[in-house]
Image 1 (cartoon, rainbow, N blue to C red):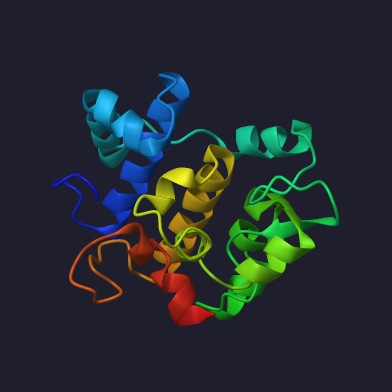
Image 2 (cartoon, one colour):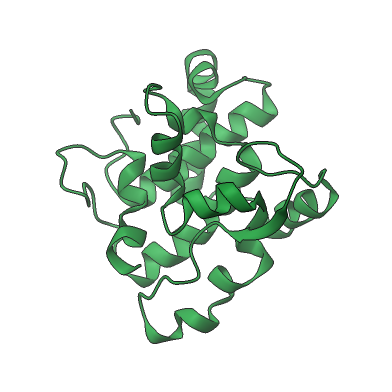
Length: 190
């Protein structure tokens, strides 16, 4: 799935973010198409994020996108029975202070979701939820709306860092580094 230079969870978070940048900047369609058509741009962006030469956008941009967007479920598009949903579950307990952590508790970690999708997602990580939602699609992670994935990557980065797992690799023990390893911190601490 990721580039061969992606060796750690930290790398994987930056790689996924680089794919989003390519999708948005170059109108690359889904992540698979962006990777195929703009691999060089993704690789360059990944390296800049990894080295610190580039940082991901201020999270406030995504907050304004949420406020200004049509109020619809980020997961299914419904406009019925909406509520704010925490992408990284509020029940995450890596440390006692998680209950007051801005990364988890604030609007930076919230999107609009219908009651049904919010209930279905429950305490699952974003990638696990999309894998469950689209079981027949091998590239389920490329179906995640960019706003949702950007907010998730930034929030989960903080959580993985607090858990001391940024330099880890195959956290879920399945023999390969995949986006599901990003969700491992949620599986372990929720």
